[in-house]
Amino acid sequence: MTDLLDTIKAVWNDKDDEAYRQDQSHWRGVGRWANDAAWQSIGALTLDRFKFLWRILERAPSAMRDLSVLEWGQGGGSNVFGLREVASQYQGVDISPKNLQEAGRMISAEGYTGLFKPVLLEGPPEEIADKLLPIDMFLSTAVFQHFPSKDYGVQVLKTIRKACKPDAAGVIQIRFDNGNPTFSGIKSVEEYAERHIVANSYAIDAFWDILASCGFKPLAVDGIRTQNNYATFYMTAK
Ligand SMILES: C[S@@+](CC[C@H](N)C(=O)[O-])C[C@H]1O[C@@H](n2cnc3c(N)ncnc32)[C@H](O)[C@@H]1O
View 1 (cartoon, rainbow, N blue to C red):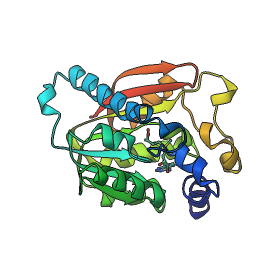
View 2 (view 1 turned 45 degrees about the vertical axis):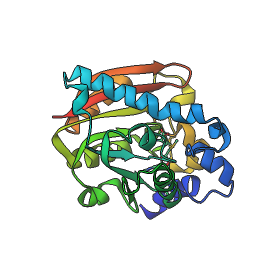
View 3 (view 1 turned 30 degrees about the vertical axis):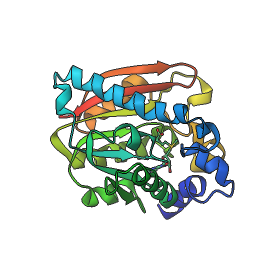
View 4 (view 1 turned 180 degrees about the horizontal axis):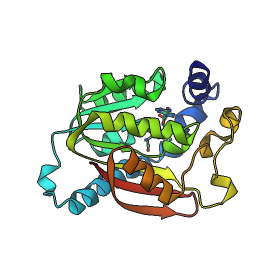
């Protein structure tokens, strides 16, 4: 696992091209995200998605507050920013100390000191299960496609599930596999450095079943985009 973690970290924390790394990690003000409206739109879309989920669950909009949130792979914190008003604590799980530090810095600079709780992943996903605080809301956007294998994503889902309170609800974005070779994923970890942007994908029906097998109740899927094979799943803890 150390080798695997080192391979992932070489891209997301230790890459020599720091400008590329920060842009890929969605740091506010860097590269594509010098356009602050574009950066803020990531978190705004995520908030809209949670409002949609709350409607599916027939929960009052006013019930979306004081929530314990967990994001897997928060990067520079675009979703931390988007969800700052509904969260009372926000755990970010990431393999990059630099990205954890930046998310904390960014949201503290906005006046939300103490909101962000960094959780550094230093081994297999399940190893942090005991360190996580119980959660009401969970999310992962633009991260599952960077996992080194389908099974790694299953381990992440099981770890998130363990932290869920009984009424927890969440949103997970993946790249889907529809036979397009661009998005079919890597065959071995040796390809990771080269193909980390499109390392992992799932058929939509397969991911629905995986969610169920990991203890979630999948409720809906939307945001299907054939330009980049993104799809967004909505779920509760069963
Ligand atoms: C493209 S950024 C996404 C940031 C944010 N979720 C968003 O949508 O703007 C990917 C993030 O996932 C993190 N990451 C990559 N592999 C990871 C892993 N195995 N576990 C946790 N985080 C990971 C990276 O360090 C980076 O912070």
